[in-house]
Amino acid sequence: MTRELATDIEGFPIAGVFTISRGSRTEARVVTCTVHENGVRGQGECVPYPRYGESEDSVVEQIEAVRQEIADGISRADLVKAMPAGAARNAVDCALWDLEAKLSGKRASMTACAIPPRPLQTAYTISLAAPEEMAAQARAHATRPLLKVKLGGENDAARIHAVAGAAPDSRLIVDANEGWTENNIRENMLVAAEFHVALIEQPLPAGKDEILRDIPHPVPICADESVHTADSLPDLAGLYDFVNIKLDKTGGLTAALELRDRAREMGFGVMVGCMVGTSLAMAPAVLLAQGADFVDLDGPLLLAKDRSHGLSYSGSLVSPPSPQLWG
View 1 (cartoon, helix red, strand yellow):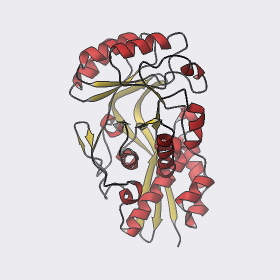
View 2: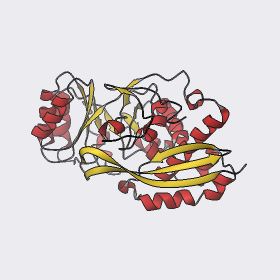
View 3: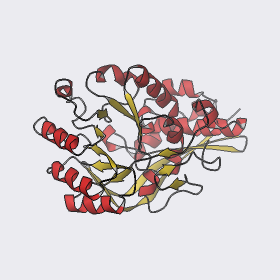
View 4: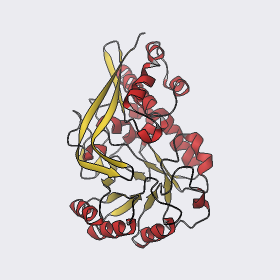
């Protein structure tokens, strides 16, 4: 058995501008890993993230470093030991899941899911902007049952107020992307509670969040940048109520399933999220998200153009991937 590896860097335009506390983007830049065996092709996609010291070139370099191991038929279990957690391993791991499914004729969901996967309700992201601009975004999507509101600047209380008023029937998740401080977290959390926010995501910088142990949680708090793999969980006990699992942080579906199951055992609620990528990146996450408390897999909805055979979205319901896409 010899497997051949290929990597590509691709760009997909975002519909408008996507802004969080760390900056703005107009394009989703992704790395695609393809593994060929006996005329069959498996693919995985990742999104390099500068917050974690990743670039397109560094991710490609990491993938290329295991070219021989891939050619020799490395298993997914051994891949977890051969590569560090992160975007590069995610692309390879998901390509191997896809390849295994196609070679065996057995859908990936039969291995990853306890029961056949079903459509899931996903959040839709409201990009960070001035309160009136965010209200306009929310108003345009007020029929969606769950909105995720990007925060992390000054005047976040006004942003929460504006979005809640513009979409009164939608549940809200607020995501500060590490943008709050010890000086404003109590006030912001009370405002979130006043407007019945369902979840607050990563309010403080990772590693500077010990205060969460000592202040009330009027709204449940979810770790994002603070959690990567199952090894992260012991340090989060008593600080966070939920964890946001992303394949680009765990380094693939294999490690993400372990993180999800361990989190449940330790009493954490589970959210499954994503970077801004195409349906190829979301496809394995839809399997991971079966049974999650919150699902945030709206990446393709934020793009001006998705891949062929993309995931099917009906309003905020996202269906499991077709075999033509992945798995």
